[in-house]
Length: 123
Image 1 (cartoon, rainbow, N blue to C red):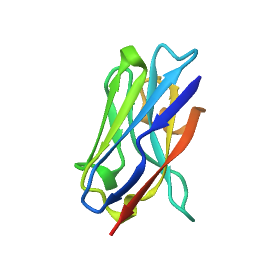
Image 2 (cartoon, rainbow, N blue to C red):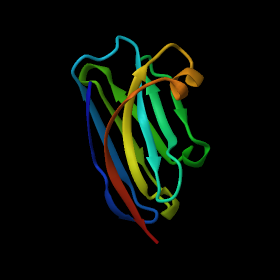
Image 3 (cartoon, helix red, strand yellow):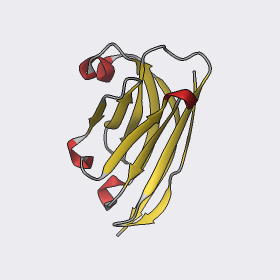
């Protein structure tokens, strides 16, 4: 599986960005795709994910501001990020994992990672 991420950049606080991640190669019949992020000196954390059936999961810190959506036909997910804050600045990593119906499983299972895309939010 190859993941191609795009859409990062520099934005002012309060602004918006949209990240995209396209999967190619041999993918799972049921999968969840999403984004983790890692800021300097911090652990990588889940931001948002969506299953191939449309179930979504968000970090509390982004609920109401970020929206994840998917296009199964294109094996692509999008992360619309609104009302960005300086604390959202990080390298965002796209990933895909087999979906077995549980977010707990998704968080702990092995996954494929794409290259990171950097999001910078100026205050």
